[in-house]
Length: 315
Image (tube, rainbow, N blue to C red; front, side, top):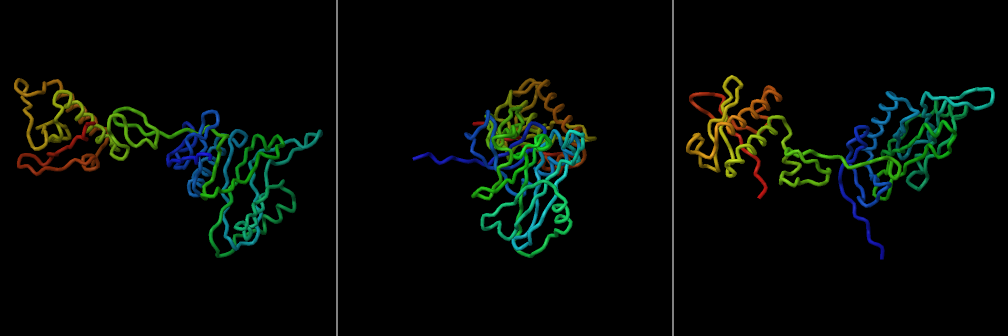
């Protein structure tokens, strides 16, 4: 008996070109090492918007585009023209015509297994497209079209195709064709992880990973202090005149001696932690302490005293 393929929820991208997009995929289903993701309709719309923006910027002759045509289950048949602005030579006299397609959608029979059809743009198709209107009040339906304009301009009859949903309702766009790879999240420790790998080797989880510059600085200051005091869990910081300075360091509820000659710390380590926090404040701007989860501590001498908690280290 063949083993059922196991799928995972993750995110994918193509370098800095497309994505990242949420998807479902089988990580063993590879094409030249690249992934074959399956997207929801909402994510397919996001992907479509990105392809169209890129085509407008760089030209349709070098970008595949994804088109989502919306309708209703009880709509009348419609015809849609998809054009690119490209032209191609059609005879020896050098006459040219627009590179475009017409998509006819039989909305009422889609649920019975029918599919949209693609054809050349003829005068009849243009006339039908002008008359086509979104009608009906039935359930929302969508048809997705994938067009490889470079090959379409060369006359390929497979360069434009309908992407039908699988049994799970997801759309495989660019699978076994595009260079999809896992999107990454970068841990505060500097390690890059595939999106579905939710815990870094350092013990930090993706959800707990600091999201703000000051949050990152808090982690880095804690890591600095723990080089000499691994038990350190929190600290008090005075932000007088927006100039961060460590006032006290704690292990749980116990204050750690910060005197240079009797405690575990030296002046250089404490100064380094101060500088990390100051840099984080400078990058983050107003309101950063609250966004980073710093807790304001009432104090008679200053109204800028905060307790910062360091993320727990890996056991």
